[in-house]
Image 1 (spheres, helix red, strand yellow):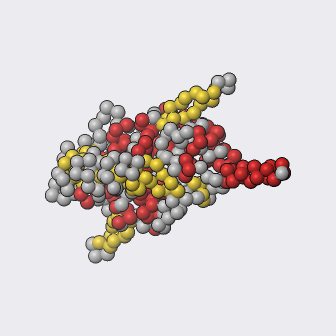
Image 2: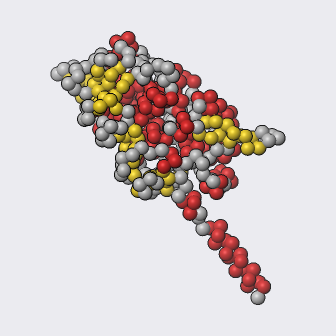
Image 3: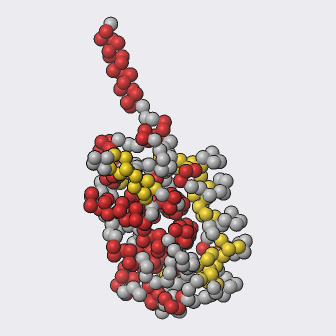
Amino acid sequence: MKKTIARQRERDTRKKRARPSALVKAKGLSPLPSSRHLSAPRRAHAQAGERNCSVARTLDIVSDAWAFLVIREAFFETRTFEAFRVALGISRATLTDRLRKLTRLGIFKQLAVSSGQRMDYRLTQKGFDLYPSFVALMQFGDRWLAGKRPPPLTLVHTSCGSECHPIVGCSVCLTKVSARDAIYRDGPGAGRSSAKAARNTRRASDTRVFAQGRPSSVSRTLQVIGDKWSFMVVREGFFGIRRYDQIQTRLGIAPNILTDRLSRLVKAGVFRKQIYQQNPNRYEYLLTEMGLDLYGPFIAMLAWGDRWLSRNRPPLLLHHKRCRSDFQPVVICDECKQPVIAADMRYRLSYKPKDYGALGPRSLDSPGFESA
């Protein structure tokens, strides 16, 4: 009898261990989950490769500083090889390499003009669809990184005629979504894959390159999160991972690199350190209000990555707690709540483009530039 009871207890214990927690299934993108939401370091260490992530796939393209700058100039209607070269001060070899790469990735297409004497580079639909992500990154840079300087440009939405400060919102209720408003669950593309070797991991050189050419709030934002490790450390903050050893275990990151990125992100104001143990002192890293505000750009890039790079298998599905609906992140005009697309925008510039070798003002009758 005693053996039967003991075996039954052992079976019950095994079932409890095997049964996944409902809290883990619905783990939110809040920076303040309970400790029960966290994966055990031992279990995370056993998982090989990186978490599948549509944001990381998007950043594989835009965190290449030169590729990003070329795409940015294309949104200002730069089209020719020489116009890109002059505006960015980029070497011919580097520009040739990036244009080939972006054409191969489907961001650009080549178009013969002037009776075939010249090839223009035009954004494809896939390329144009990056525009909302750039706008979300720009808004973050305007809010947090401009200092006392005026924003480099102000958006004007031609659809409603209003000065526009776009927000990243819920596709269902069209209200702004914050990190505290949303939870996630695994999508059909969830899992882990081997790390992408070509992804940018360097730091110092890219910080300088992002500042090339015209003033840009998007550039300022990518100077903070535009390398692989900085982005992934911030992403872990949205998954509720706060402690050094947990971040290191989940990312498989070298200690010196993690120390460097955390130090930089604390200095930039994205994280704040909070002591949780003394003798020896140990700290956890909490997202600040500035850090939490990166959620909008992150999910805007997630939406692009889901659409173009996930093969209809998004790694995460988002749920808006306020309207109780699954949603797609959408970048919308704060005035008319319509989606922001490149063709509907004009710009008031706070600088003279010619000072940077860039294109000058265009007619106010078509999307493009407007005199300051």
